[in-house]
Image 1 (cartoon, rainbow, N blue to C red):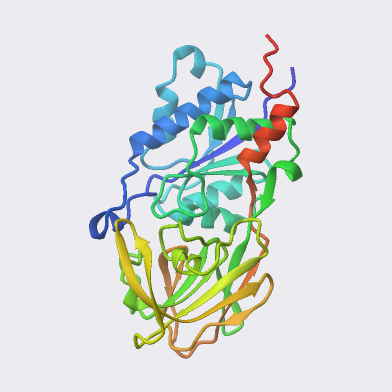
Image 2: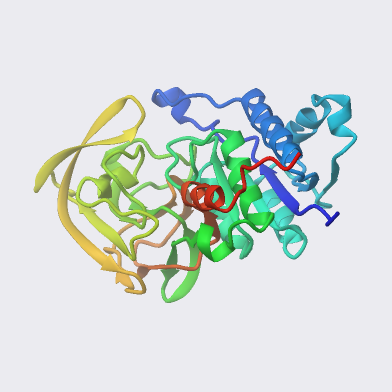
Length: 336
């Protein structure tokens, strides 16, 4: 019997815990539910003949708890190792663990939000990625049943569907300060007038200056919903949207769902469609840049800030397309 493929597991215990649960009505995605998702993933994989894992260690022990909750006959069939990293309880754990997995896994499953998947994009990993949403205001990862996610991953790693058939190369936004590369986002870059990083999340529209988004739609929650008021841009579209907000209340007013349970009034000064690879300058005067909904770094108001959208992110599994192809090729047929 051929050896089972190896699946990487990254579970972010901090996803879904930010301040928007205090200042808005964001839902809570606790670690018990994350453990339940992991358990369903593993049990589905076992039914499909996949039993090998490399796991990101994390201080809450979510995957460890899930493994110990499995039936005895199931846990005996599983081979796994923890990535040998120094656990810090920060984003560095995700980065270091995934970097260790490169060349050792056939697919990666990520439980987290936009922020977690942004770190995945920074690692440069090239295997198919299944992003499962467990954060706040998520745009990039899927809200998907774990069983279906596992089926889609299995269909690819078992060879029923080729990587080029069942995935797409995701877009990223590269940020430059005075011509030097600074950081990357996978959904949106927002320039603001905040003076501090603080609680990181953004829920006050008066501080928002500009939004540059590669994923946006009117049915999103979060900062990308501002761009989504004017154009819907998905993973498949080779474009981005730039929006400049009015600083004095001039311009046409709109309502945007920046935070759950609240419609915020904003005034728009300019909207532009931007091609991939087209570098644009942000307006001078911004003091802090937010990436994928979180305040990340302060900048000098006199800095020359530029952004560009390119298709150089991870290969993301299109689970609907993958399972449709897999069905046609007998993936769901029982061979017992």
